[in-house]
Image (tube, rainbow, N blue to C red):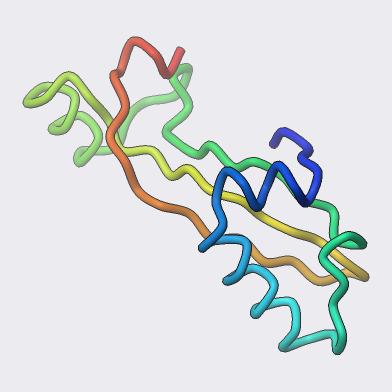
Length: 94
């Protein structure tokens, strides 16, 4: 996960940042976004591991595989993570 500043996280994923802050606020009152540790999330199957059946079908049929792109935030032992699902070219996953 790539560390981000709050400004970078908000400019890349404003809707997801709001969801992360709402999730963190459930556990910790008065969450200051500037005190949250922000990270870029890029989740997909590891290219060095075997793909599951769904990923194999996606690659064979479309040449793309599912990838979750989003943002997560951590503060005081609490964690929130939200992503959008998109399809990425298989050769760009490596």
